[in-house]
Image (cartoon, rainbow, N blue to C red; front, side, top):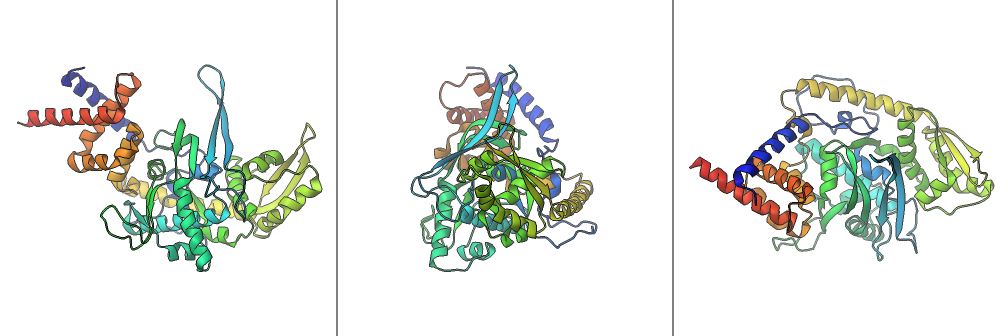
Length: 437
């Protein structure tokens, strides 16, 4: 075992290096970075921004992960789906595929379009919390009647059951494989997690023993972290609610991302790949394909989002390539976002001396807890880690995390990372107390 002096020296170097790294605001891959922040209640000079659209901020990884499947009915007999996100060559020149797997609870099934509707409504609630309080504090209160109203639905017994099932599905549907970590600006392999880490619904018992008077949601650490580090994208919620066809709702996200990456040029997608991603029945003949897709295409065309589309026979002849051309709404949306980027740039300039106002969208203790859980991988001891947050100062916890991370990379941990972290934290606290005396 190393001496405390040796640990302290290495931890101080690591902590200093991390402070330097965190002083640079991380960019968002293929997305505007600080521009699409929810508006904070700050005293700023006036900027002309159109309010014709109602934007909500959507965490970007979930938008491209294939988590929601376009369907008006529950999907039977299929409980997993995979999506390839990208391919790259590793340092040895080997081809690697970044992909994510959505694994449903057998009883609940895969998340479908109605679940996406409620998720969009949940994002609006999140926006309101940030606008009002400037940050998240767990848990988030999510009244059933509010989420139904925001989703544009009418309250009845069936819809209330849908919302309860949605809460269960967001805590019970696994995301496996790769996940994007905005803090590190890269994808990480070997992830298994959910969107909500816990939900206590109205009438259920809270940890305090009291009955919940509304629904309470605890977001998973990876989601919280990505939101904190601005891996978000704006979405026109009013436009989304006008769409009626499930395929059109999913195409809205797919095409906007595709056109953005292509800088407004046409975006092409193979029919076979579209069927795999959306879990659509694969048809052989073009007339059947058009009958399947064109009602959604025409809905997007009527809204001005899609200018036109073309079916082209693939080179090998057994598939079709669908070429999508962006409509005026897409370009208008980009102008709206440019205005918000201007606002965000003025915020950065106006408050360059206090960057915490830019990033403090989440209570610091929530983000620190997320970092501990990510490092220790020990969710069953969450209560113990919450006690640690109340007992020790954040700089000391960060030092212990840095030492644990380094020890893990060097293979020096013989027990669990959680035990190593806790033991290191206690010894660092003892050493600091000795120095003070």
